[in-house]
Image (cartoon, rainbow over all chains, first blue to last red; front, side):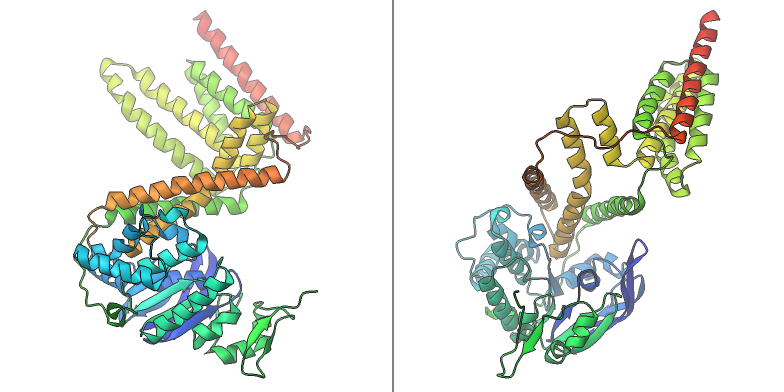
Amino acid sequence: MIELTNVSYSYEGAAALLDIHLKIERGQSVSLLGPNGSGKSTLLKVINGLIFPSAGSYRFDGAEITEKALKDVKFSKSFHQRLGFVFQNSETQLFCSNVFDEVAFGPRQMGFDEKEVAERVGDCLKLLNLRGFEQRAPYHLSGGEKKKVAIACVLALNPEVLVLDEPMNGLDPRTERWLAEFIINLNKSGKTVIVSTHNLELVQEISQRAVLFGEDHRIAADLDTYSLLDDVVLLKRVNLVDEYYHRHDEHGHGHFHIHNF
Amino acid sequence: MPEWLLKSENYAPLADRDTFINKSILSLLKVLSKIRAQGGYKEDKLFVSPVFKLVFTLLYIVLLSVSQSFPYAYIMLTCQLLVLCLLPGRDIRRVLAGSLLATLFTFLIVLPTLLSGNTYSVIMIPLKVFSSITAVNILSNSTRWDRIIGALKRFHFPDLFLFVFDITVKYIFLLGEFSLEMLYAVKLRSVGRNKSKYASLGGVAGTLFLKSREMSEEMYAAMECRGFTGEYRSYEKFSLRAADVLYLLMNAAMTAIFFYFQGVAGKL
């Protein structure tokens, strides 16, 4: 469904992505891991057609995504409906005066009548435990609530692919856990999910496959999540973890923890 | 999960115009990449104290505005262009682009005075505009903002003015990035016919205003926590270097030339 071949991208001459080969099939759940500045967020922007590769090609469902292709308004709108993007800073994603209008923004544009719009908004708010927030101003919500509203806005478009950039950032452990369960359920319902994250505790639960980026802006490994997390040497080599991180899974309950000393 | 979310959406979008959003994104991207490009390497050039640069740039503009002598304007212009040559090529292009655009605009405005035979204004005014804007551009391209603020402090500019100036410069880039993300969000979520595009952009502007207030309050609080009392201090030690002496001599000569030509004009 998503195919990147030999993709490179640079900001003002500084490389952000180098020679990326990545194929994601429909219904997969993929995590992007890597240290800060390794190119994960840039890749998500390429996948969403916000920036375009300086070299290589990107195909979505067989169609090449280029600046020229996205100038075709109908194609561009259909592409953006099929691919939902939740930004790292969800605050930037909210621009309406209340939560109801925020979630209804997409469905209204898709031509639904107000009854269907209200139904869809209601479903999304219920799904994200946001009932009662309809008339609240999005800007004044807490970080976790803003994140939920941003997800609701994207879900209301019913995209086939859901792309989430560092969704766990700034969330309390309870909301983090809730979001992980939510992502798993979305994937089970048939959505393709791409998540960029630093949360190694939850990554093995939310995705079957993990792509690891190195500090050289290339893909260092593309493996099933358990195998990748088992390869601590590789994780250390790309500077994602340090020597204090280790993995316990002798009881079938794998997790990472850090020693306090 | 609601039933509609389990099905794939059978949706064919209608055509709509997104030019305004796309153009806004493009122009913001250009501004941000320019700021980013400057931020990486901007350091003081010309090796002259910012205090002297600031004083003589202002003096230069005042003298040029007062003068009615063509030879003086030409000599000053030549000096400006010579100083400009000392900057890197990228800075020269940036300085000239701004100056030429403003000069062209001024020239078009004063052009009708030719009809009344006023050739003096048609040449002199654009010349003065070009020269003055080049001087200011040289100052801003060759001096870091914090050093300009330090120089302003030496002239006892009010702290409130310096604080607003400082924060504005610091936040132009951050707010630019924030607004770019918001425009991206509008673009990504505009998947059909948006009947109220300007309302969405109004929302972006409103959120941006709230964000800028919040950011400046947070930064002020952080500065207070680190001992800032609202008073700006300049910690730079002043020392006269060879480049400063040369710059002072050059500007003294230019001031003398101004009075010489004023005297010549007086005799005539």
